[in-house]
Length: 149
Image 1 (cartoon, rainbow, N blue to C red):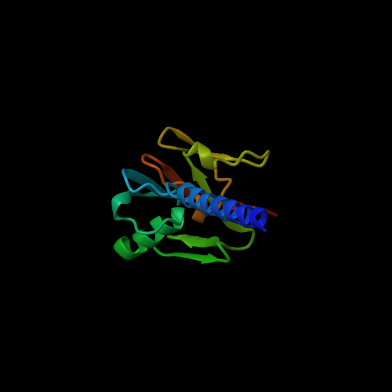
Image 2 (cartoon, one colour):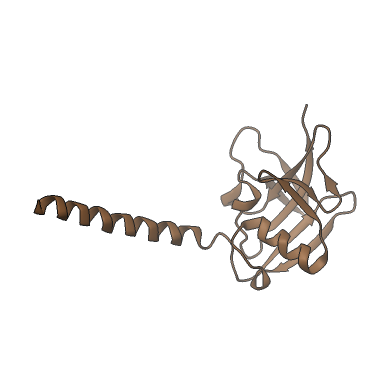
């Protein structure tokens, strides 16, 4: 019986450590220091420099968009976790919102990755969703569209 109690305690301690590590890992996805640049890739791109100290939440790009909606009136919409509208960009027939980033950790690494040039930088399509994008100091996030079909 003592062996089972010790095993149970050990498992409980390991579970607490695992939960703590997961909590720490999820922190830092959205930096509270520095600035992120968000670009809405219309014919004449619109650029927002966002002070991350002012952004609440840890939902990556979604937190930045919520801040810009409240502070600058930038409209955005999502459906099931997918962005369907950002500013003047709207999803339509075979037209989808597509995200590009300068944050290497978020790059699409599949054979389907694409790039876009902005202000002399090559940005790579994101391999993660808007909620999981890393908002680190100096990051440039470009919101564009892509046509499939």
